[in-house]
Length: 279
Image (cartoon, rainbow, N blue to C red; front, side):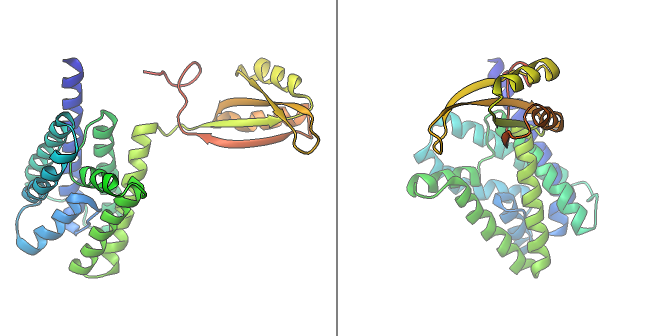
């Protein structure tokens, strides 16, 4: 029961943040950052109907299609997200816009949309709309990725907004809002404190591992490998550290073995001792 209440709460909260961002930043300046909300912004301009009402109306046929393809539980939470977004957008429309300049409006509006949707996705919910549509298309055309379908849908909405509202400026700022939104969603879902994963190849692997443990208090994993050039067995060290620790690790490795070879990549999310908790 607690899990259901928590999921419902964050779905409603996330939808409210999205509605706030739409009404106070994006819709007044005709910034249509893709998705159903962007399409609703365009249709609202043409018909005079409210964006909140249009979000609900546009989602009706999408839900009918979704009912054929997805389970009842997913659709119920999607319905909660859609209703919450529609109601909050209707309510916040009573407030005056906060910004009258396109650039900051696209940045703040995109960030707010990303934060709101990120909260909904983080808890496993949905606001309906393009989420359902993209997944339906994915089932019909499995050779394409979900990202490609989102790009197709959002791109179509943004281009339509540019044609209706008059030109490249709207397309540019709508694209900027969509980009900012996607980055904030990533930050909410995976965090912004990316770790670094470092592979170290050295003839002096044991000493390097000992130095890392004693001077940085970081664990090191030894991986067995074979050099395809010499045919010899080698030990590759794997170490996961925080970004801020990378310069220190580089200096330490270089001091121990100047001939060592490093491969450094981002670890999107690291859970466990020394990093974030698993739960």
